[in-house]
Image (cartoon, rainbow, N blue to C red):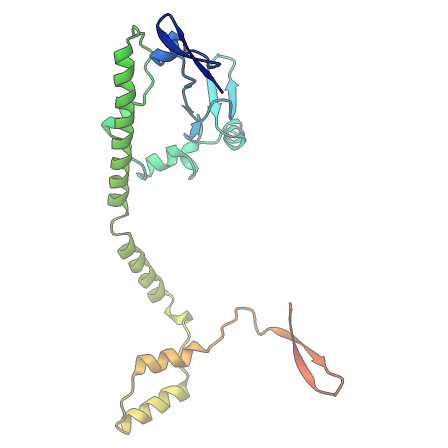
Length: 227
């Protein structure tokens, strides 16, 4: 258990390290810059990923070996769907916004000021919250009307390939026509759906099933299918 003592009129907890002046000012905290991957754009955290330094001195940071391998194969990240560059070119991510300018790196020397550091940290949190809210609004606008477009594409596909859909047999149509001529109420759509529901369509012929002969002479169907 730590003991509390008085040194020079101030209370100190014995057994606990006294924070230094840099730690009290916020300069001694273990915070490092999180850089973006040079290929896919994902965050590359400290002590993770791969760093490649070219002969001319330019360094590239990769978040995983997948990005490093594609970079060595000289692939264009704008043509791969899983990269940030492709999503920006396709209009799937917010590109033009004032909140994105705050994350850019600026190599400008500034004299240290404790109040400036505190205001900067608060502004960073505020800007991050604003950017997340704007990204949600951008996503909702981008996805507006997607369901209607999907339904339109599905209807178009069904209309173009209507000859592949199961059809009602001639005997069923004849029976419905006789029922309608007799004065009975017939729901054609419901009857057609009921008649075509049990159809089994197989692209490559019928299945071969194995038969098992019992000891009493009977024959039963085995559950295994033969290719």
